[in-house]
Length: 215
Image 1 (cartoon, rainbow, N blue to C red):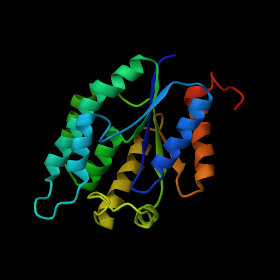
Image 2 (image 1 turned 180 degrees about the horizontal axis):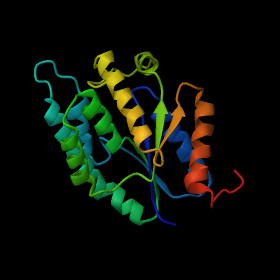
Image 3 (image 1 turned 90 degrees about the horizontal axis):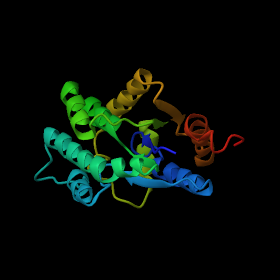
């Protein structure tokens, strides 16, 4: 069995972590070899980059281009250290964010040059695309309300303006329309159980039918 890269995307508070955990438990029940990872922070270097990217600093804010380059550096290391080796070993990778996040957040959200973003994404990935991307679509106000209701403090990106998060959401909407064979929308406003069943149905049809034909 060849490895597959399955990416989970969406605005803040869309439920990616919850759904990745449920999907990992399902894969484990099927005896499918898998790994859970994320961007930024999927490697030791990435953990340090994640802290730099997400910690809020009033006195020395991270520049927008600097932010873009740090995400690209995290991704390049992630590809070489985690994604390529695990795919070569035939593992299913469940990845929290990938290239679409950069397009949505730094492209649509920040308004940075899309050609530059696409070039950096290609340099970092060497052209490696996801086999399937699950877009958990939820209203930005709902997602941010979920984050504010949790015990964890909001990070630098989560503290951005509502206008920023709406631009990010628009980015995901346009990406899904542009790449319908790769990006699959799932209504993230439903209960976590219903969302999970909808994701499982997509995975079953697209990637796992040979393993669980009757599921």
